[in-house]
Each structure stands twice: as C-alpha cells, then as structure tokens.
Length: 101
Image (cartoon, rainbow, N blue to C red; front, top):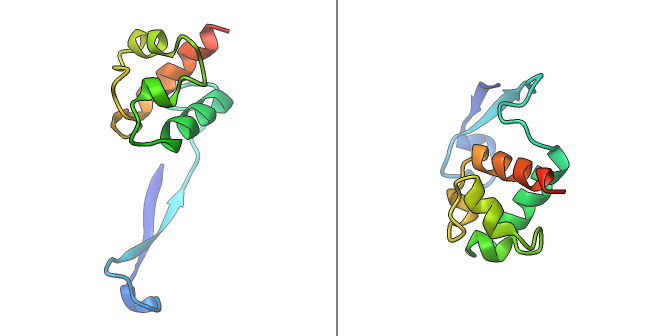
C-alpha cells in the first residue's frame, strides 16, 4: 500500500527538474498479492530486464532449458518482451519454474 505524503516543488532542487517530486509512504503487505518464491522472482525479473529489448525466450534461456514451455504454460508468448508482462505474469512464471525443480 502506498500513499503520497507530500509533494516537493522543482524549486527545492538544484538544478530544478521539469517535474514535481513526492515523498511516498509505503507499507508492506502481510501477504503478497501474487504469491511466488521471492528468490526465484527476483532472479527472473533481473534476468528478463537485464536485456530489456530482447524477446523473453532469448533473455530467459539461461534460467531454464524449457523456458518456452514455461512461458506458454502460464499464458506468456515467448516473443513478448519483459516490459509488456504484468506482475502477475512474472509471479506465475516463477511458480511454474519452482514447480519443475
């Protein structure tokens, strides 16, 4: 859960940016909205975004030799790119990868 505590005007910075900044208060949830093993999810997201303009089948091939089967199994096209996948998709993929171990 997140909420904006206060906005900070550009004049508070040197040089002043062309945007207004904000202080955000974040409260961690007791349970994840989309459960997944945190270590697997972290590695998966880091690997996927490490080569952002590549298709997922290419950027994630180091994670599993069967990555295309895992991707299609959770409804993600192997030709998709990391920036097009919602959080739920990455969590589902992490669960799929953990289930195959």
